[in-house]
Image 1: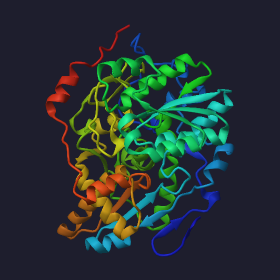
Image 2: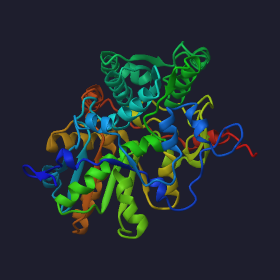
Image 3: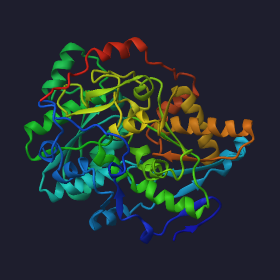
Image 4: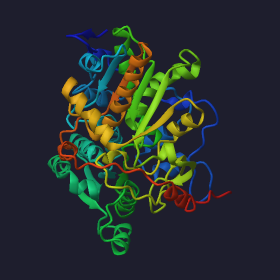
Length: 460
């Protein structure tokens, strides 16, 4: 199984790539809240979910019984164009920190789109094509998700409509160009193409946009285009499911390295990348095999859904068009500040991650963006990778934990979930390097204000 090439690089052979995704819902402890139909208050059915998503994705979304879900061979063939990805031992970073900790990172930036997002984009596009759909509509924050779905659309001959959060659309024009190169149609959100967009533009012409708003526009679009379905890049169960190929590969690679993580860190905006890494590991914590393993969710201080939000049913979008999901939320009306980690600017969090946090199985920490970029610079100058702004947040926490090991004289194994490169984010690095990047801490009073706008959960 696999091979080690060079110092600290662990490869799997392609015939060792996982053939099944891991569905944590089959092992989920406690009473995991159901997704609710917003009108009836009853748990959503597959038919309800299939009104939004390709039907197979809807089935996966609500599947609470099957632990393993087979990856179709046609999907495996496309995955093999970049998977399995490499596990690295961060020897140079360890040396720079003078730490006894062993630091590993699983790097998802080597595919055509440069992030973890194609793991689910390819799957969702495949199921849409099998269903005979013409296209998919979606939103994107930093642009990684929109890029990945446009790539997937090119592979399967699907039309892709992308509503990109306006501040990211302006900050990251090359993401838009990448989407258009792959054949996608990307517009800034807020747009004049939807009722939601037009209403908000009239109210707030200079609104920087939000993922919640872009989701509303993307869902409104499919209502007017019945041969389209909606596609989402994070938060929901079927999306996190498709990402578990990351952690399943990593388990095999860590075994090759004769190592097991004491601490796993990952950035969370909606939660898909980190869930894809830690879900295959947390079953050892749930079963009692590794009860002391720490799993740390790292979010931006400016969008602190897990560290400042409240645990409640809320809409996934601003206009209230989605089902109700129970999660840590800053309120579906949340308009984020224009920080550069666009993928971390969502008002909520994956309900599965929220449930695990509520049960005390995972931790959460908020990171200022200047501290995150400082860590990204150190990582680039030791490991050579210019990371996206999003993984810089968990690199910061990994470095801090490694320095604690140095202070305590303890050796721990730290595993970083690295979601992708930052080649389209160099303007943000320039702002950091020239001292123009500022921190922003989301105020408590805004959280309390948003709590008053939570939807009432209907009782049937």
